Image 1 (tube, rainbow, N blue to C red):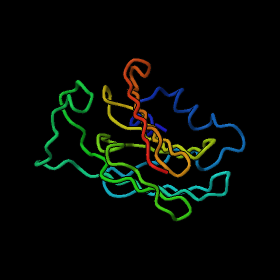
Image 2: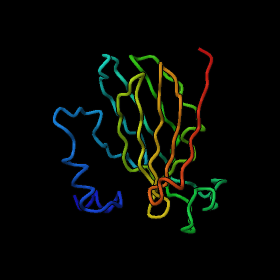
Image 3: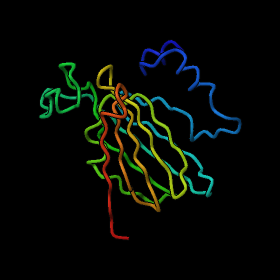
Image 4: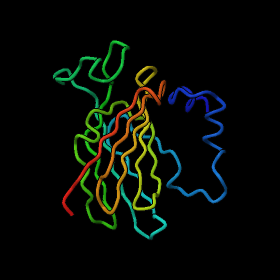
Length: 171
């Protein structure tokens, strides 16, 4: 638990609530999964609708030639960019690809944990990342087989530091 506390940057009480605070009958989809700092992590779950959702999340270290190194581009004031960035999110529903636009995740760095949550019309992918002043919670919401919204909230001031993007695709 100490490692989780250090990685996520939450109070001990919050970590305990995350670990044991789920109601009886919680599904694997509601469980936080550690994301590899480099390489690909796969999340899979069976939704209440019977759909099988599979998400691959890839992350890579920032190379010296990376053009977006200014710390202010990463919503932080800590004087440094993230060590890693998301390079790919591939989503499928019942083996059918679901388009996840590059702009929905390409500015998210140092992702530590992720989880999937069923929603009324689809599912949500929750990403938790950043460090100290740059820590954030991001949610990519998928509805009817399409990416519908992306919400990113700074963990330090979630009601003051946030952004939301809505996506529209021809159906």
